Image (cartoon, rainbow, N blue to C red):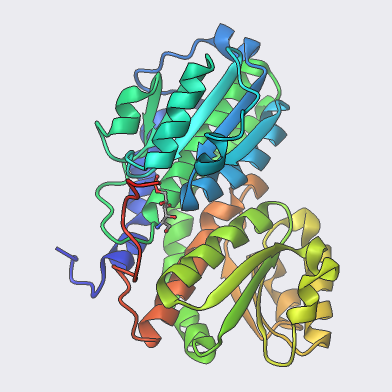
Length: 365
Ligand code: M6R
């Protein structure tokens, strides 16, 4: 049942290219995004005043990435809220707000409560869900399934990457309807999306180097993730994955916030995972690496092939992903972070598929 692998989590990490093919390829026809059984009309999209993304845990982190992608492509305001907060925050939502609910299981109680609150306020609810026929799917106005297949490990991997791919497609479709993306960029991003599964296979093929880095740092008690913009959103997921299964305390920071507090925790030997995949902010990422190195930190960096040479001059270890369109970088960048968390937990002898105190779907408040 684990396909010859020791853990479901590893199996599910390895399944991601195939899961992405299922989530993406049938939805691109003749160079256009095309959703099956989809009831949102173009008029509805044109009248939409804002998008509110609501989710928990890793699904919320997908929303954090999605905010950058949606705002950049559609020029419409996007808010992201934790479902557990949204339900009590008296959110500014009305009939022109699209609420996008993201849930792998489709059964998370807080997310379900937020969905009901959104509907009560008159919003239309579109959900991105993996489990077909789940409660959230049934109560939503529109559903886009992620088609990742069953996910057994408590730590989500293929759930995250397929949710992100579906949200990217949705952003592209909105942008096409609204005319807020240049046709050339639209086609470039779509082409790159079709290449993501193969590029992800290349990332997976490099897993031995990630295992090596894990063997070097698995004994640390506290790890920081830092990045800007899309890399910050990605860091949130990297940090959650690591703490969830390895029980190492870890936190993700927006690099610009370092000087506003976090850097006081950086001392000789602190591990900082520096995310620098985003091309236009690469120089800023480098200067933050230099800054924490100067305070004695060990730096494990994540960057693209085109920047790895430069990063290697300063960082202690570099995880590399293929170049792609900048908005798609988190889809590839998440894989080394999943693998790092996995190998660290393995070396620490943790119960990877069933970490202590956690359940696959959280059906209590
Ligand atoms: O099934 P859902 O996507 O609604 O679950 C949300 C979170 O409980 C979930 O992502 C959780 O954070 C994962 N265990 C993270 O790996």
